[in-house]
Image (tube, rainbow, N blue to C red; front, side, top):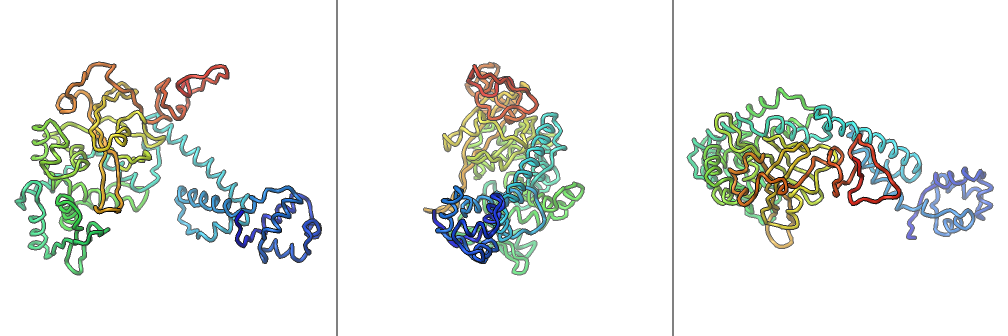
Length: 470
């Protein structure tokens, strides 16, 4: 075992007290002086390898109890627990190391209590989701509150949408090429100069300097991405009061959520400006919602095209109501919006039978699925991977799978329904909201039993589907 200077006097004292020994008796057993043992327990001297081996020989104690590996594990677990609790107290890493090194039993007791708290919170959230009342589920993170803000409005913010479309008509830019028109509007109306940073590895996509009166966008972005960044900044400059009005009457549990909501609304404005409602909806209907063709016609990425489709719900001229989601390989859902009745679980994960997860095994390929929910509703789901990066060999990329879908009653309006038997039950894949609140019985992919359902435990029988009886 590799050891550095290990000051673990509390652990040594605990061992001595568990064995009912005095310092003098321990010193005699280890063939050390009593003063030396006293210094060890007070962390005035380190536990050396020879002493640890002696402890092992005399008391039969695994020297791993004095290992720094265990300390590092405890420190990591403590940091995770404290971050989940959202404590406002600033606890230094040095304090956690001190606790883990000198009072490991207390650290483990704290972690056990946190585990019970987390389990109770999860059960409460699951029950709330089971009864369909998401208001009972306390948002943990500010970005989750913002997602709920858009979800509650079915992902359509009419005031922002109309403001963006009005500016599109004012500036007279061409579809897919608004950058020049936006730059002129900044220059003529606000005295702000647009700069394109040609540095290949620029990490900042957009930077606005009120003092210098400049907006800098990264040169490695595609023209549509640069336009999106410019349009986002325009929302803050020209429609800041509107952003404030739309968030002022909302009660956010976390003060950061309001600022994030303003950014989310500015991003919504940008999408509505580069993909204006009327032209985009007309093109979508003409192309039967072919996302790849829409991407090419408007010069945007697949994800942006999908996201905009999920917002086209103007009262007098609605498009197909879609849900939209984005996940990573680990199943983390970083975007989820819906203009449909499709419900995203906030607890317990999502369903591995959903085709959005198959997309990672088929990069760049559009996958189509008829997905039937436990309530009997069926959705036409389209999924594909998308990759974002700075370009260049060795530069990091971000890969996600995006999914967009609509109720099967709208499926014939989509090109993706071609060749599908929309009425056949056999053509549908049964999926769920998430294992812990999914009511499906005998699902072979079930990872957890459904909360509140009894288990059928039989030592004499093993079934293909786990947690049978849930």
